[in-house]
Image: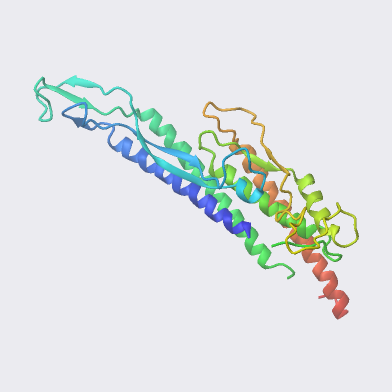
Length: 142
Length: 143
C-alpha cells in the first residue's frame, strides 16, 4: 500500500527541515558569540541532505524504488573567515587583546529559516492530503 | 495490491493504483525539494494505464500482449511486472534549473500533487457509483 509510504517520505522531509531549522536557530542565537581564539570561535552550521533511494540513480525504472525520503548525511561547519577585533577590556580577550566573533551571516540564516519553514509546511500538506485520500478510500462504496 | 481488469469496475481500479503510485512519487519530489542533485520524476499516466490494462486483459480475452507460456516449474514468467507502468517513469524537465543540480520545482510539484489527489478521488467516485449500481441491481431499491 503505497499511500502509507507517503507518510514515511513526508515524515523524513519534515525531520530534515526541522534539523535545518534547528541549526538555523543555533546559528542565529550564537551570531554575536565571542571567543578567545579563532579555533574555538563559533562557526555557522549547516545540514547536508541526500535523497534516500533504494538503488543508485539512473538504473531504476520501478516506481516502488524511484521514490524515497530524505537522509541527513551530517552537519557541516562554514569555512568562512572568522572576524577578530581589538577589545583589550573584554575578559575573553587573548594576550594581544583580540576577541574572535562568529562567522554567522544573519541574512543567510533568515533566508534559510524561511525556506526551511516553507518546505516543512509543504510536507505537512502532502501528509494531510495522503491522510484524506486514505480515509476516503476506507469509505469506498458507501 | 494488484487489481485485475473487472467488467464492473472497468479500468478505474488500475487507474486508482497508478494515481496512488504517482502521489508517492510526487511526495518524494516535494520531500527532496532541498536535496542537492535530486532529479524530480513523474509517471506518464497514459502509458502507465495502457501498460496496466493490457497486463490485466492478457490472460482473459487476448487483447493485451502475448504472455509467455510457463510449462515447467523453473520457467520465469515474462511480462508480469509487479507494478503497473514500470517503464512509464520519466524525469521532469526543470523550468528554472538550479545550481545545486536539483530539478524540483516546488510550485509545479504542488500543483501536480493537488491535481493528482483530485484524480484519485474521481476514480474513487467512479468505483463507488459502480458499487451503487450493483447494489441497486441486487436489492431492486435505490439504496
